Image (cartoon, rainbow, N blue to C red; front, side, top):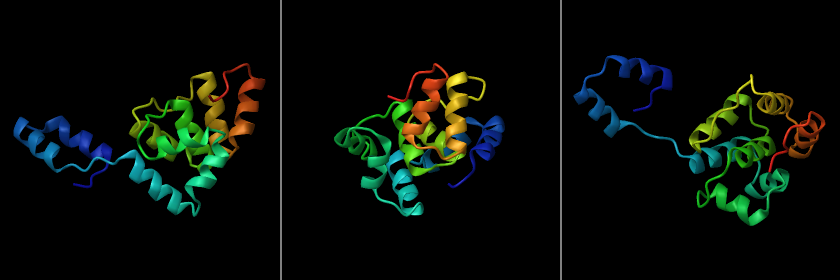
Length: 138
């Protein structure tokens, strides 16, 4: 069942228990690893290139990208910055990894949103965060 989230939410509002059980059995839940691999292919890059641009330790980054380690919000953001993801793509990856989405009314998140929208590198994003007395991506 390929439905948009908003459509599913609307259907769930009026669904019976039987319909709910049927939906649960038929829904395809996207996984971080497969979605990340698709994005790497779409962006015409390689895992190695992405990892070099994340400033993460290479082995740990590979473990996150292979789904063997759960990436924190900062680590996923670093991967998204390295991939030059849009804000929508970044928030999708955060959601897929059970991390909170970026929130524009939070000062640090606001700075990160600015960095994502302007396709800044991880290093430049950390400089931006530091210049506004916010914790750098770690």
